[in-house]
Amino acid sequence: MKPVVKIGGSLLRSASDFKRAASFVASYREPPVVVVSAIKGVTDMLLELERTRSYLLYEEILHRHLSVARALGVEEAIAPLLRELEAALKAPRGPWSADYFASFGERLSARILHGVLTAMGMEARLFEAPVVTDSNFGNADPLRLEHRDEIAEPGVVAVVTGFIGRDREGRFTTVGRGGSDYTATYVGKEIGARKVTLVTDSPGVMTADPREVEEAFVLPLLSLEEAVEAAKVGAKNFHPRTFIPVLEAGGMAVEVRSYESRGTLIANVYAPPPFKIAVRCGQGSCVVGLGAQELTKLGGVAVGRYSVRLGIPPRQAHEHLILPYVKYIRG
Image (cartoon, rainbow, N blue to C red; front, side, top):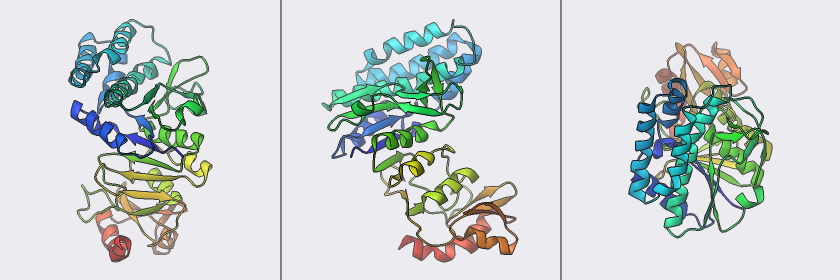
């Protein structure tokens, strides 16, 4: 079955980044579905453009994409979109307009990557906003996946825009910030994928924020339920609905990794140890793990089935609850 790979925007900044993404895609034995994010920082620029309608800001966005596309020889692929964005500066405002402007980020980066893959000699098809959603602009819910059979077609790379969809009237929608992860798992569920790989600049799901806890390390395994709790308490910058399609699909796994790392496998596994993640929650910390409920006996407050809030900082929680099991976790 065709795998699904999401390339995060933090990995898409320059022409060399798109080449590296294309090479990673080409390394798959079975050509995957590739869900593409906007170039790093572009979504914020587009939302600001919608508010200000500043031609100077438009030119900044234009030159940023043209410099990448020209270096890759795919300028013609994005020229029509850049003209459409310029015309949008005069478009009326409405509840849909912020999503419309935001859609250009994923649409531009998907066209660039599609062009690079094609130039490499790979058979690739581009699908812009194939997810049909409701009209809850800014936080839309997927309703169905159009072109499912074409996206799942073996032997062909399917390049799909993350984060965005269209409502029944054909207006662009977005599924919320960080929504490319959610798009990837939703598409994976719809085509029956066995695994969805989320490629980011992080080596995987870590036991703590490494900026706060120097001893933090990558977890090799995490259950789906623990991952859902981790998303809720902010342990990883997942879209809060990322794992809903995974739970609905049953049997589908999620891999979080960088290009180099082995990363974290998130699946229907219940691997010990009892405590896996400690992150900051207000003045204290939230601990995620199969045994988190046991911490209520020590004064912790249950946040969910597998997460508890403690009145100690993450460094201390990590030291006393996670590091004692470090040898077991790392095998």
